[in-house]
Amino acid sequence: MLKIINIVLPIMGTVAGIMLLVTKKLLFSITSQLILRSDHFLRRNSIGKLNNLGRRFGMKYFVDDDHWDLLGYVEELKKILPRFNKETSSFLKKHSFHDGKVVSITAVNQENGQTKDPTTIKMVIEQYEEGAGIFEIQWLNVRKFLMDFDITRNVYGNKPNEIVFGGRKGLDDWGYDEILPLSKKKLQHEIFLFSQTKILIHCSDIKIRKIKT
Image (cartoon, rainbow, N blue to C red; front, side):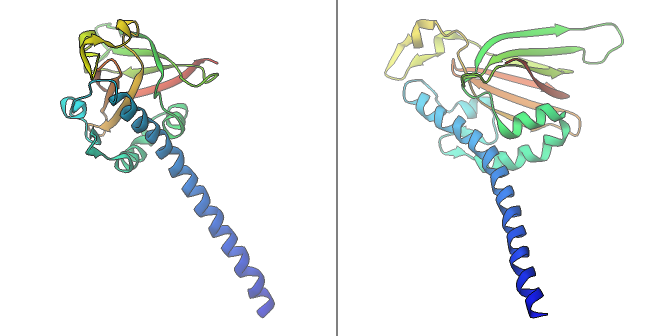
């Protein structure tokens, strides 16, 4: 009997250790992507003018340097992941569009006299990492779409009259974002681009797919 116990206990300890490791890796995967966003935000803040943008946007977790709740957002995101299809959920768990180049933004109005909320917003993004590919994100059944692009806001912190890169970056790269539930059927997605542009979308679903490797 003693021999059996001596064999079983190490096995149970090994299984528990593996389960703990898997859990830690999953949390690290989600958190690390958000930390990348935070890190780049702070680096850009040293040359750009990011004055309490989260407050202006109305974000809940990424408000400003004093209110930057990464772990809180991770927990919030985990709750709504089941709403998305497999490819989208997997992307949101493991990756982000941080530093991705905004290639295009398109509004499609598929009005036919019958479909409710027929507007779809599409964005094509080229990922920052070499070989990561090009993705398309779609917001479906859009009820609100706001975008406040103004290139004159994108200036250097120590040169308030000089537009960053002379305006050659246009919309510039994807900075950070929040996806939050509005209700059981509606979502809110707020996006901050490094051109100081805010995008706010209310929709029923979000789909992300890779369109080019």
